[in-house]
Image (cartoon, rainbow, N blue to C red; front, side, top):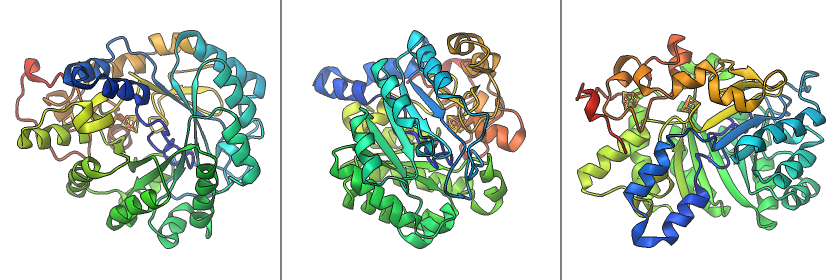
Length: 401
Ligand code: SF4
Ligand code: SF4
C-alpha cells in the first residue's frame, strides 16, 4: 500500500495496490495464469473500487517532516463520529468490497479504531491498518490480532534510528516502531514495511531491505515523496530528482526479482514503464510468476481503483491529490465514485496532457497525478519526475498491458 501511515505521511497502503488474493489465485493456476489474465485484471475496465484509504483521524503523536495529513497532536472535533464511521462502512459495502486501509494521522489515536475495524470486517471488507507503530504495545497488539485485520504496515523511513527519527520528528520513534512491529509479528500478523524514499535515505535502501528481512516482514513498499502537505515544504531539499528516481526504479527492478518478500514501489507509476523496458531488453514476458504483484496492477490507480476518505468525510482520488470529489456526509459514496468529475477525468487517459498524453506507456503508468498537481496545479498535466521522452506519438500504439 502507498504509505499513508504516518499514518498520514503517505497513506500507508498495507495492501498496496490490490491483488493479494488475485495473485495467489493466479499463481495457483500455474501455467494458465499468464500475461493475458494479469492484463485483464490491470485494466479494470469497470473501475471497481479495490483499495480505499480511510484517514480515521488527523491526530498523531509524531511530527513527520513529510506528512501528507499535516497531522496534529490533538484530534479534530470534525472527525466522523463512531456512528458516522459505521455508516461509511455500510456505504462502502453497498457497492464494493475493497481492501479498507485504516490510516491517519495515526489511526491508533482513535479509541474506537478496533470497533470500526471489527464492524468493517463483519461487513465483509478486508481490513488493513497503516500505523507508525510507536503506539503498538502488548494490549493494542492483542486487539489488532483479534479484530481480523489482514495486514499491518509500519512506516520505517531509515535503516537506523538517526535517519528515521530525524524524518519522523521524534527521538526513539525508530526503536518504538520496530518494537511494535515485533509485537505484531509474534502474534502472527502479516506485516509490511512502508518506506518513504527521499534524499535523506537514498543510500540506505539496501539496508532497509535487510532490516525488513531481519524482522520477518512479508512486504516492503517504497514510496516516493509527493510534494503535498508537509512534503511540499521539504520538496526542494528532499525530492529525489528525476534521474535519481530512474536509478532507484531500475535498482528496485533487480532487487525485487531476487527479494524473498513482496518488494515493490508504490505510487511510482513510471516503475511500470521501467519494468517493461527492462523486461523487453531481457526478452522476458511479464507474468505474475516472473514479476509478482507488479504484473497484476498498473501505475496510478487514483480514481480508477483507489479512493481516499478524509477524517471529515471528504472524498479524494488519493490522499495526495487534494481535489474534493464529494463528502460522504452529504452524498452516498457509491454516487461520488460513479459520477464525480475528477474521477471521470482520471478514468480517461485521453485527457492526460504533456508527454504523458502522448506516451506509449500511459495506459500502464499514467504518471502520478498528485505530483503533477503539486508542481503545476493541474492534475492532468505531465508527471514532473519522469525522465522518459515518449517515442511513439501515435494513439494506437499506447501499451495496453
Ligand atoms: S496520484 Fe496516483 S501515483 Fe500519485 S500518490 Fe496518488 S495514487 Fe499514488
Ligand atoms: S511520460 Fe508519463 S505516462 Fe510516460 S512513462 Fe513518464 S510518467 Fe509515465
